[in-house]
Amino acid sequence: MKVLVPLNNREHIDDYLKAGAGEFYIGFYDKAWVERFGDYADINRLTGYKEDANPFDFDTILEIIEEVKNKGIMIYVTFNSSMYSGEQLEFIRQYFTRLQKTRVDGVIVSCMELMELARETGVAAVVSTISGVYNSDIVKFYKERGAKRIILPRDLLVEEIGTISAALPDMEYEVFMMRNGCSFSDSNCLGLHRQEMCAICSSLRNSKKEVLTNEKGFQPLHNTEWNNFIYNHFFHQDACGLCALYQFVKMGIAACKIVGRSDEWEAICHDIAFVKKNIDIAEKCESEEEFLEEMAFPNSRKAICKMGLSCYYPEIRFQ
Figure 1 (cartoon, helix red, strand yellow):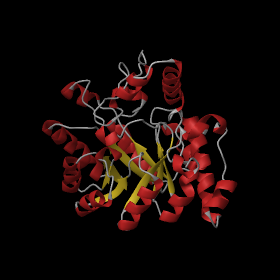
Figure 2 (figure 1 turned 90 degrees about the horizontal axis):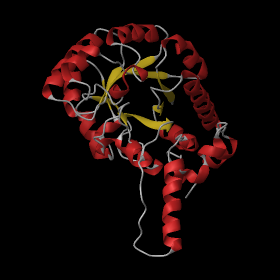
Figure 3 (figure 1 turned 30 degrees about the horizontal axis):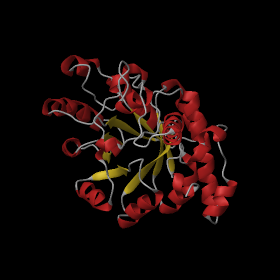
């Protein structure tokens, strides 16, 4: 299993690799796209954060692709907005055509139209979590249409991931592992991530609210307010899936993903090191019980392990 890492700092590619990165994914920001389609049309899910999450323009990522490939590492480019118009799809064709002339390993796509466009231009397609691949029938659908890899939704149980991967074992699978969880299903969310206006999930979490209960009295109101406080302060604040690594290694999952294209490179390297260390431990362990005893925890364990609310896969320890 390889550690898939957001490449958001060109100067520190070697630091990512030294920490244990095995693959990269990268996005870009194109002012020509914005001039054509406006501020609220996304190339990828983080277009709204502009250069903060997409620090490179398209010409620069073409250079970075070759730089990364010269180091023998795989790299993917993200095209995973929730929706595209016909005109936008035709605009994207020029990106795919130029990417096909590089050694890029694939494009991460969110819809069937982009799958078809990738096939037409000769670029390998990775199916984004935005596509909502929740069962093996959907995997089969995309496999028959040429998908190279499936990124499974972050809200699947480990058991469900095992069932899907066992049903079609000749497909590559990618799972979420560290950072930036979400309370909603990516595939059923049409919200936009914007700097000037938070995503729907953030707006709901941070908005001023009044709690009302059907039952009168102190205890029902207190319990509801306490539940609201816990959820808003601890749920996926710094998501982690390390405890599930043993099962994913045994399943033959191709890659585990560290989220965070807008995060600092040092923080990303910290997570890479812990994921890689635990993959190595998992590969040597004879059982899941042994792995859970031997695994290495990040320094923030006391904060992120509270009640399993920051766990991508809480069923491993919080059943």
